[in-house]
Length: 162
Image 1 (tube, rainbow, N blue to C red):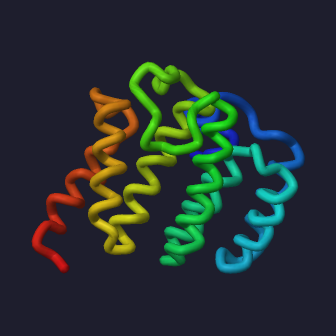
Image 2 (cartoon, helix red, strand yellow):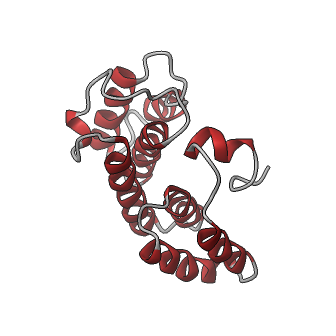
C-alpha cells in the first residue's frame, strides 16, 4: 500500500500529505531510486516540517545502504516531529505520558522514527546507542505498538559480534 495515500499515512503521520510535498514525491517516483534522494531532499528543504518526506528519505537511504544519509534524515524527522508534538529536543529526556504515542500524528511518528534510528545505529555497528534507543522505546511504548521488538531481536542476534 502507498504510504502517502493509504491507511499507513493516516496512522503514522496523522493526516493527508500536503499537495506540494505530494508533487515532489510524484517526481521522485519517476526517476531511478539513486536519483530520487535529491528530489526528496529538495522537498525536505522546502517543507522541513513535513514528516512524510523525512520518512521517505530515511527509508530510501537505508534501503540503498547509505546509512549516514539515513541517519541524517531520521534525525531531522525526529526534530520536526518533536517540535510538532511539543516534545523535548533530546530524545533521552522524553518521559512516558509526555504525549499520546498511540494516536496518529507527530508523537507517533516521533516514536516510529526513534525505532528507525535504533535500527540505523545497529546497522552502523553502534550497538550501545541502538540499545539506549530501544531502552527508551521500551519505556515509552511498553506494549510495543511501534514494533521495537524487531530491533531488540536483532540486537540479541548480534551479541558477540564485533
